Length: 59
Image (tube, rainbow, N blue to C red; front, side, top):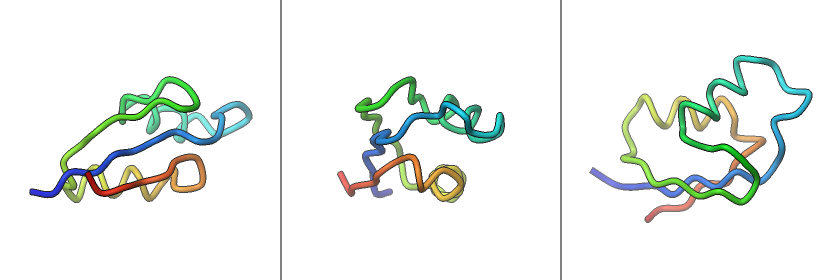
């Protein structure tokens, strides 16, 4: 399966609790942090939920 790199580019301050939890479940703790995940439907759904806070690249 394909891999994606997810980078947090905006802060989660003043965001709903669900978006904060989504970032945490992706493994993102701060701006500039990069994590790599498999491109499963679950991960892609979480990325789509916080797409305004992250950037995505194919790995």
